[in-house]
Length: 445
Image (cartoon, rainbow, N blue to C red; front, side):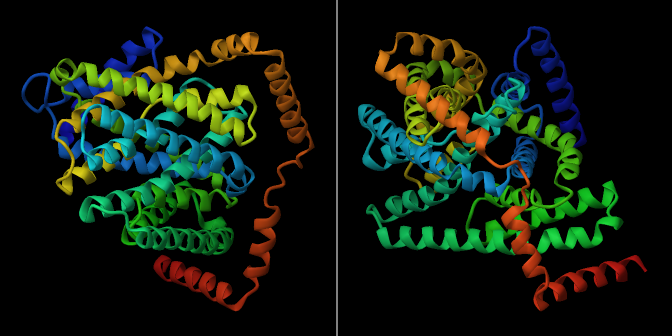
C-alpha cells in the first residue's frame, strides 16, 4: 500500500509539474499519470487498482464535503428556479440525445436508456476543479452552476431506481419511482432540519475545546457518519458527504473547517483523477474511436445547448448561462456508477463501458479549453444576434444586476439562526447537547 502511494504521488507530481510548465490544467496531468501507472499501457499493473479506486472514492467524498462547506442552503433556495429548470432541461434533453445515439447504434431499448442515463450527468468534482483552476470561483454564475449540479446528483439517485426497475421488470414502475422520490425528499428534509438545528448548537457549546486537531477529526467523523447513513438509506455516499458539508456550512467554524480540509481534499482528489486515467485502455481509443468521437460530440453540443437554454429559462443572464453550460461539457462519476449498475444487472452491452470511460476522459481533457472559449463565443453570439435578441439579453443583464444590488447583505443567519434560537430552547435539544458535552467530559477525565 505504501509503495502504491509512493508510485502514485511521484508520478502525479512529475507529470503535473510538466503540465504546469506547459501551462496546462493540473487535472489533465493527474489523468495522464493514471494512464502511465495503469494496467493497460505496459500489460501489467504497477499499482493495486483496488487500492487506488478506494482512495479515489474517498477523494470524491472529500471534494463533495468541501463543496458543501462552501455552499449555503439559502443559496440553493435562492437559486431554486435556475437549479430546477436548468437541471431538468439538461437531464431531459441529454436523455433524448443519448437515447437517440443508442438507437442509431442499433442498441436495444434498455441499453439505449442506460446510455442516455450515463450522458445526462455532469461531474461535480471535475466542474468544480475546472472552475477553481480557471480562477472563476468568485464569478456570479458559480452559485447557479453548483445548484444545478446538486439537483442533478439528487435526480441521479432517482434515475438509478428507474433504470433498475426497467432492467429487472422490463417495464416502468411508476409507483415505485414515486415512493422513492417521496422517501428521498422526506429523508433530506429530516437530515437538514435535524443537522442544522442540533450540530451548530453543539459546536457553539464546545467551541472553546476545539483546537484544529479536534475540529478536523470531529468534522470528518460527522462527514463519514452521514456517508454511512446515506448508504444505509439506499442513497449515494457522495450525497451524504455533501449534505453534511452543507450542514456544517451553517456553523461558526465553517471557514476554519474548510481551510483544514483543503490539503486532505487535494491529495485524495488527485488520486480520484489518477484512478480515472487508469481506466483508459489506449487500444480501445483506437478500436472504438468513431463511437467515442460521436459520444463526445453529443456530450459537448448537448450540454452547451441544453445548459444554456435551461439557465436562460431559469433567469440567468446569457453570459452566465453560457459560462455554466460550457463548464458542464463532460461526464463523470455518476456515469461510471450507472454503467456499473447496468453491468451488475447483466443488461449492459460490454462495448458501452470502454466507450463511456474514454468519452469521460476526453471530455474532461477538453473541459478547460472549452471553458476558455466561453467569453469569445458569447461575444460572437451577441454581436451576430438579432437586435430583438440583443435587447432581451441587455434587459436580462440589467434585471439581474438590479436584483443583485437590491439583495440584502449576507447577514446570513437570518432564517436559520432564528429557527435554531427557538429550537435551542426546547427540552429535547438541551438534553442532547448536554448529553454530548457530558460524554466528552467523561472521555477527557
